[in-house]
Length: 329
Picture (cartoon, rainbow, N blue to C red):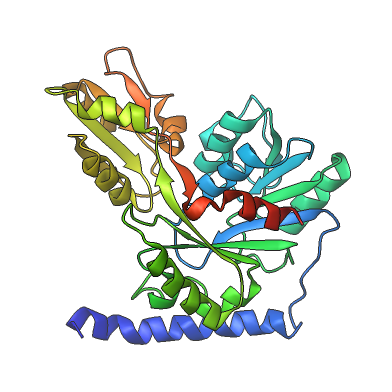
């Protein structure tokens, strides 16, 4: 074991104990949970970032039955406001957070959007003011004051949660045994070479811990757009992101033959005008929807064109309909 791991191991063990005890207090009923009257779907994970939670909420907003009235509730990470806030045309990434504003900008005609750290209070506010069929809770798996109708647990392919370590040695922020609270597990960001036999092995490992349906997704892109970029010989292309795992997007673009320079920022990065100076040397700038809601307010006419690389969960083995059917019951 490397020397750094020897230092981190006891810290990781202590963290594991803390999250285990916290969950046991909820399991024993010593800390109370609330079951909302309206149907609630939680999209969450066991690790810190990078598992595709927001793209999964986007997938549900695109494909959920149109007859249902939906609301999306987020914490509003990184916002400069406090308390309950219903999103409107007056908002931006600073008032509600980048991911919440990203979702609102793309789907404001499909759902009602709100941000609040107190999910119990927010659900009560939404339910009393609107006739809702479903509330989608983005990144609320650890918010155990809510006993959701269904928990959608996402885990990245590398590493799948059962192969990961607890913080700070690994990326797990919750105990592995909490897979038992999920009604469905989705293994995200699977490689293009992913096979059915590998899927069976992972499914067996998950079901040893909790007998629950397991689905597999890959990062889907606008392949025609990327193919066009890959043939743009001589074009100077930049990629700028503030993601938990921007390297994966960069590697996906490189694999598709796109030649580019990567400017990697921390997750939820608040861009400044000086961050954009280096981009003037390029012919085209690629970014994500999450970053674009912040970059657009800083963009000036002397900067190159900016294009969004859209990412959507693509379900392997043609199982998207089965996934939606399971959640709609």
